[in-house]
Amino acid sequence: MILAIENAVSLVGMNDANHGKRVGFIASQLGAELNVSNIEQHYLFDLGLLHDCGVSTEQMHTDLVNHFDCHDAHVHCEIGYNLLKNFEPLADFANPILNHHTPWQELQHQYSQGKLSEADIRRANIIFLADRVDVLSLKHYAKDILFVRDDIMATIERYEGTYFNPKFVAAFRRLKNSEAFWITLQERHITRYTWEMGVFDTSRLLGIEQVKQLSLILAYVVDQKSPFTTKHSARVASLAKYLAQQLNLSSLKCDKIEIAGLLHDLGKLRIPDAILEKKGALTEMERSIMNQHSYETFEIIRNIKGLEDIALWSAFHHERIDGHGYPFHPTEADFSIEARIIAVADIFQALAQDRPYRAGLPLDEIIQILDECVNDGKIDQAIMTFVKENKQTCFSIASALVDANDLNTMMCFLE
Image 1: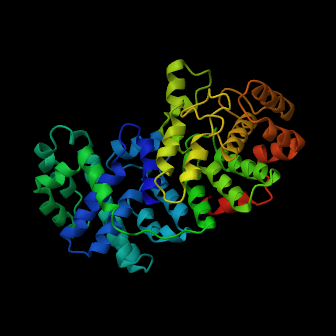
Image 2: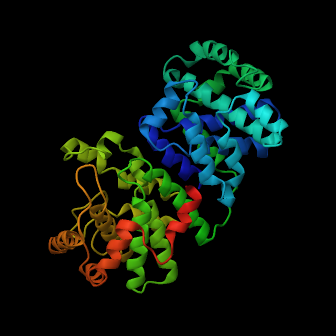
């Protein structure tokens, strides 16, 4: 679950998919130098994976990477805090995430006022230090990282006692001397380290409502990618669940379809903002980039045990009955009813929603386009029959998030 969130957020970095993993490694190694317990070292690693869960746009990521002291850093900290604070399995990470760009002096002031615990300020400041070490090192991992480590240390030392706890800086000073530490941060090694950390048994069972809440967190992140996709995932999920109910699928199936709808566009975090917000038609090259997003969705979800079928339903949302969709081209037999429902809901909602190249379409025009899709062998005729029989309700759900299950209320904890 934690890796799924990290993998989703890491897509925002476009060409750098390992920032969270490296911050987790650096933080865990700082913890080892400070003689914290093995459990606390693992916590610090997980916190590093999660620390940027509030980042969802290229510009936000670029600002955080290019500026040591980013003026708007608090924005993603607050978003991350709000995403996790009410999600019980990860709520313990919320306060450190809220404060992971807060200078040490300010953290001490908040502690003296009883606003933060000693553990929270320690964890937040370790992540702040680890995060800034990674930012300073980013351009050097592949070539001269051992050569510049003293320069990185010198920069960190300028903020000792103000931004960073002197004890943590001293721990980094010791860590800096280890060549193995810096080499592990290179791409091929940090991926291995993350895999090895995943061997620790920290698994737990989640109920369907908790899985839905996790899905809402991930959907919120991807829907903030562009103002033109705000609440798209939630509306697709709500419409897909409604259609599943009309088709008399089981209650569990309906819930899982809703979750798949929430997660279906996770891979769009990898798509450049300029393509998502382009006002004209996409070029062939841009279209080829866009067509990768549903596979990225599959890669993020499939490693969460218990969500294997949801991963496929989500990834198939651009597949077509005639086999001319993307990216897997399943046979008609393998294109399940659950996936077909999500595919129809996605098209319907996209047509109803304002996009950079057009305003949302009226209901009659949406129905006409969907009928053409049926005639062309793209979407399921039986599902389309239910859509037409309930077209006004479908339109209300797709355009305004009107939902008998009140998914909007569930979204409120993220606002």
